[in-house]
Image 1 (cartoon, rainbow, N blue to C red):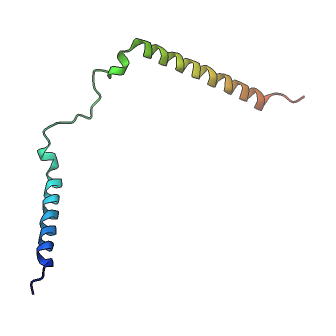
Image 2: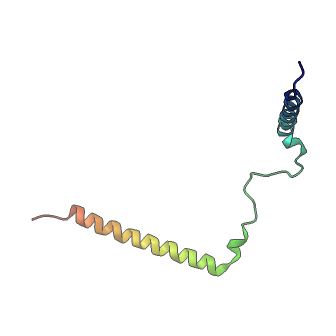
Image 3: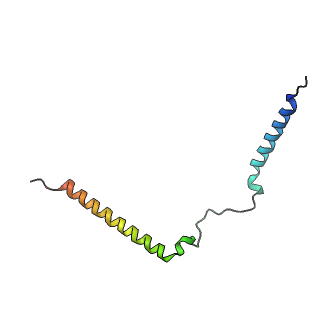
Length: 82
């Protein structure tokens, strides 16, 4: 009872078997070690002093704007109604 479908079944079986073997052993063949620790050296974008200055300025302006917003909100919510 050999059919033309039998070789195809074996081909699929062997392909899946090989893929499962490769995925199971992927970490053993990878020679590059990854470190998930924090690096001592900061990334390159922090070396630009102008960008650091602009960031600090933007953060300060944002904090001031938020403070003004909350001050107006507090005044509007808690003002006395005589």
